[in-house]
Length: 395
Image (tube, rainbow, N blue to C red; front, side):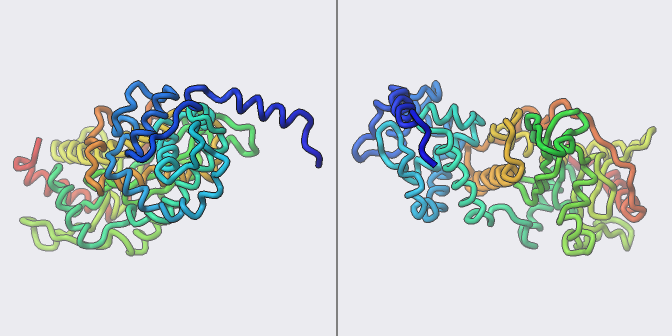
């Protein structure tokens, strides 16, 4: 097929229309990579403060350098793919440049077109770079998001018990909605959630340090929390005893007072032997009310983790413009991976608990009335134990 008439002329006009600031910013010979990149950011009016690395990327230079070293082999082999994608200084993108562009896409949530305009690059270049970064991290950084080893789990239990005294607790679970603009695609109604918004759900289990330990995404917003849990691999592993099967004898309790390992979830989840939820009946006794209070204070770790996830990786906040529903789960997963890497590196830019734990603004609390008989007995045992030692716990 012959090229469209006028295509070359339009291409030359587009090149002449490249932002002047982007064309005029050569990288300094030698010198630090960040110096040159900060000048490009300033020239493209990307940020009011482009001199501070952490304010731009929301991570330390140490973490950034680790990401570059982690995936440098993949990006070096694929450099040829980007020979036509250049900054205004006409330099082929190095590993640092590509990682920086991908991180800016994830941290700012700006459109591909908007970021491309700031650097004098077309939006397809930004998309390709970001996707190569995501693919590389999926392959190279998977070890940063995994279920704890027995040694790690012992530490996690101790940290959870230190929060509000709950013994043998191994994690906390919750879900959050990633909003998407409406789509005219077939079966698009399946993505409509209970608040009549198009969304994809992320289910996450975190430890006491707000590190993601198990994540499931890709399910449409029309499914409730309980349904998503039951379709997950984590649920199947727990049901057959491959996870959360350890037991602990409660100190100071009558003989045989043993509790199984468990995670905590809110009222939207079923009460299961390995999943402790709060009491929901009316007229709670003081002991049950105190258990609910301690329970709610402990699961703040997962609420905080999800709030931080959306705040740090703005690509997950707000409505995504007709995202690829096959790629979005992988983007969500990589944002969780990046969060864990920052925790593992004790990155000071990570911060602690967010001022607000509301990661699903506008969504009403879901409720499940499913309760396993054995699980109810274990929760009562925990409630009695917490009531007995309550005076020695943090308020």
